[in-house]
Amino acid sequence: MLPNPFLDPTLVHGDLYRTGDRLAERTRALRDAKVAGRDAAAVITDLLAQRTSPDAMVLDIGCGRGTTTLRIAARLRPRRLVAVDASVALLDIVRTRLAEARGNGSVVAADFHRLPMPDAVADAAVAAFCLYHSTTPAAVIAEIARCLRPGGSAVLATKSLDSYAELDQLLQLAGIDRDATRRPSLYESFHSANLLDIAGTHLTVLDVLHEDHVFEFADVAHLARYLATTPKYRLDPDCLPDNLAAILRQRLPAPPYLARSTVSYALAERP
Figure 1 (cartoon, rainbow, N blue to C red):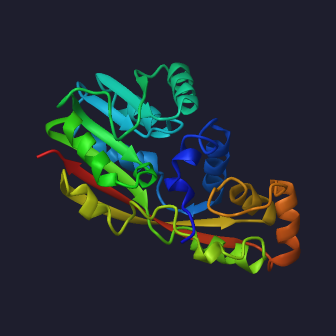
Figure 2 (cartoon, rainbow, N blue to C red; figure 1 turned 45 degrees about the horizontal axis):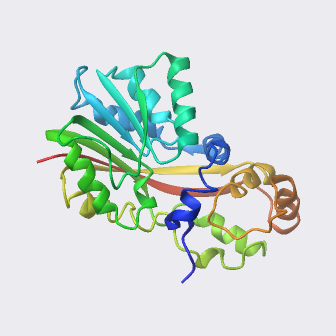
Figure 3 (tube, rainbow, N blue to C red; figure 1 turned 90 degrees about the vertical axis):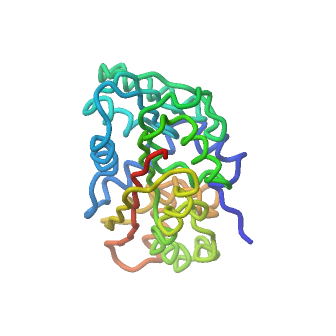
């Protein structure tokens, strides 16, 4: 079986998130390509707002660069907001962004399998686009449940197994990664189809939303920006965006290039 880089601890705690640059560029490339689908941070905050009061203590687990953290801070203004991530580099970015936005929040470096929080301390928790980095996501759900007070809310977000599968086909067609369509989904451990079952191991799921997102890469330069930052494919070391774009221009049909993903959200509570 081909390896999944999102489940490789050496990569997750190394090259993937050693700095925020790679994640930032991948996020920008997808954002610039999106032609359908709501902003995920806005959806998460909307769901959280249904059950969270201003005096709440909120955890943003696997916060990444803090996009959702900032949205929660600005809209909900919770009494206490704690952003948690295993990457110190990403937390430095979150800390700076919160300070620039004058948001009320703090950061904690931690493995989400062992959250350094007391039992029943939080009123709400978010785990967005991070649980697929665990080979045992149910164990992370258990930690989230432990940290929530009884009746506390959780919002979980992930993507479908077949997200961006159209790009696998393009990479294989171009001969850049001949195993592209055989590589496991980056989201195989926690995805749209198993979200309900895994979340339900330790939480009571109140609602699940599935939304279709569509991306249109207008030219090979835009497509190369994304492909060069995703860890899924086996690319030559010299495949920087400009070099990759030149190869794609020679080998692919004319743009645009479309890709799709289902983004799924679960609203749950601790029993």
